[in-house]
Length: 350
Image (cartoon, rainbow, N blue to C red; front, top):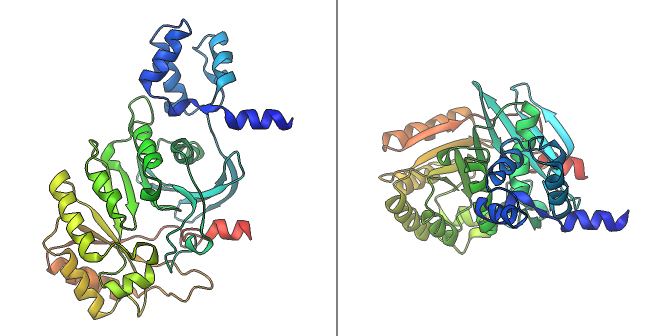
């Protein structure tokens, strides 16, 4: 029994093969080239977890593929549903490592928020995930499995995905890019590149690399302060990348891609919501092609940080818009459940 389990872990995930590699493999097995498209439609498009479900594939081929490959899949460890319809999950992989993901339905569409790492090494002061450090990075298919799990649970197609859960996507760059391409692929989930958003703490080499990718993927920066000393306290993991350097990099990103990035700014009462902080944020974003998302911080039990008032959030929006910066207050979803990143995972693990 033990050896079978290890054999399963060793099998390569079929979904990580490119269409070309799968075609070559199947032709070498004496199969027609079109079988590759059929197999990928089952594996990525319909996200089956067993080769037996591929009803239009010859049984002998299904058995051969099952000996060498797996189709991924996750186990659900915990699940919470909010009054607003959003659902939060803790899902685990073959090795027992688990992460969080969230499904957020809105007007017939489904947005999914996924994790790129189990835990996180960035140690952001206000984040429940960062407090426990990094366990390991996820593979591309483990990221996609979170999307398909949520999509299957809602019994509806995911229309957008945000890489904003646990982990720093650019600390796991290649796997993140692989997941983006699997989600974007016409034989996969077919989600438009502009509906796939990666959120980074501001890893500058990653941003530069991302700006050179051919797809129109969307970029979000977790900013949280435009005052260097405040940002260093809040986000020690990116201390070595100065705000000045980040500002220059983002100007280059816009010039290279023509795309509008967004800045995430979680308002923390008495900390980054002062007049000085607001002026710095206006200076940082004015005259740039940027959208600012003002986020009301989730109230996390045991945290020293408290969310700012709605009135203060509205003042930030007014000042930024007066300076010509497109700004919105992002609706907080799932406030009646463990909505903050890492919060449900922490509760389940403890």
